[in-house]
Image (cartoon, rainbow, N blue to C red; front, side):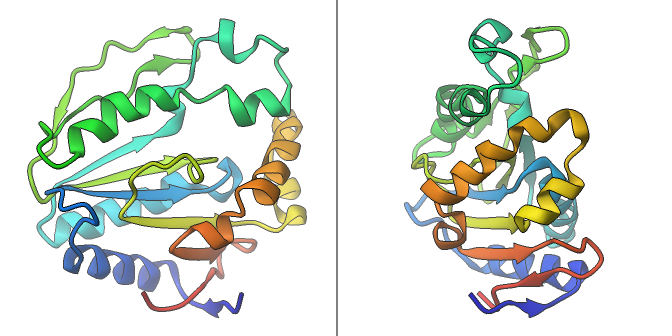
Length: 212
């Protein structure tokens, strides 16, 4: 894949302009956007930039992170605290994401979404109040391993790190997750699955797959 140099500002503006102009693929009054990437790629930072750009364009935004939808420790850590296959398969409560985030944003849905479900530090439900996303609003879901689960994204962005950059930028205590991301690359092939690919090896000099 050929990638072009771009700034974060130009990238954010291009994504925001595309979202303002596009309809949902299934006719829903809401758009659903994936900002997919390992924690080392900081997908939450791009989500924050894009949320601000969309709000400046008059769009309501709900920004959610997958780490707010972890499964309980008894399930997440069943095979130990550092099992990469469990991280890939079991850590994130994708059924809860379907139920609490995506189903309310389907055609005919209520727009009433849950911002998070589980506090991994306290290992208990967050009890957060539901949020009403008005018609025309945009869901920005950010986090790792988002693609390949049939989530109904209208636009998906994959933040790509080379294996070397991923290893360098992943904290020592989290490097046990690296095989999970290698498996994701091999099985899901996010570069092919995503609508937009952003290479973020050097966080000061991103590159992307080109105009939408």
